[in-house]
Length: 102
Image 1 (spheres, rainbow, N blue to C red):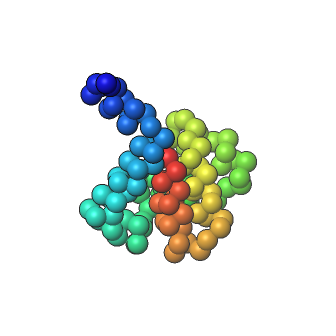
Image 2 (image 1 turned 135 degrees about the vertical axis):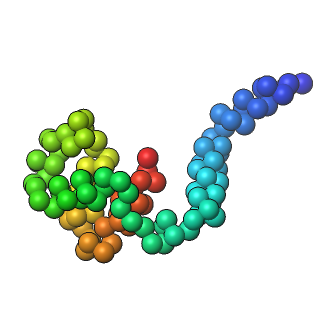
């Protein structure tokens, strides 16, 4: 008969645990403040640094310039896409929903 530790290990390492945990955490965030996803905004340096740098420079410069002292590929990618793909009114939607990938 399997003991408690083995059952817990099989649950935590099971293939459904991580997706269910993600959905549960997402649900808790929405319950806490649903406006984060319905009316998103730029956070911290997204607008003042990444978005504005993407707007003023080329894609090559954007990829090769360490903006905060090191390379932040996900922030660079989200900032560039939010500048190039959608109007500025919808740019925070791009960065907010791309943050769910992380």
